[in-house]
Image (cartoon, rainbow, N blue to C red; front, side, top):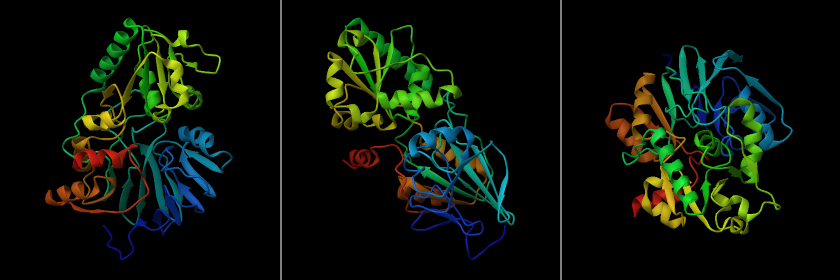
Length: 342
């Protein structure tokens, strides 16, 4: 592997920069050319002149960002910019999420964006990519985070819904409008009742419906009556909690699906009745297993429990360090960190 004074990828005030190709990966400030890992707002921002991403992510970022100049690539398709080879590989995080492989002069770096190793039945499953340097998130980079198989979580969710229906109450389940909401929808049991959606979730689900077989949903409008919702399921973004919109659901029970539900205090602070531990990121073991499988020597930790996780990696013999970014991981990260400290 070539040792160079200038790293293949460097972190600057605009994002992750490949000087050899004059291109950025998931930049957080406007640039000329950006390769985008996935559609979440902290990774795909408005203002870049040209966007490159996986073709299934194109309609997602167009929905979010409007009229942009974007080109879509296939999985494992190599495209070259100034003699630097790039390719996109499934990250398993949400629909259209990619790891970005960068190769130049025998050196290979992989930027994961956000990723998870469990196949959720919606996103294309995570693909192992060998590399010399691995840029990883560590949103849940603590041993306390250990996910149970999602089948068990969805049995718990559907049983909760069935119980609420039997008690004549509406089930309101919170999940982010892109990614988590579609994962929940995919595994809800429509035999229990109807599935209603908040407008933000319905809009995004309409964009990705051609990519996955989802149960039928009904958008909640001003005309929707409280009696229609009783006993049924409502999927809503976390921002809807405590808003005037949710008053229409009375009597209702709230649930939240997030990795942060590992901490009891997170549920209490959010005034959530029921927490389900379900994340679109790797848990502690998933991170460690992924890193080891790449065969990398160097690891750069970008967001999450970066200090703790990189220190552990150094103890395991990796050349690991942290870098500051504007990626947020799963929303509520700072609040959950406070809970852990408490």
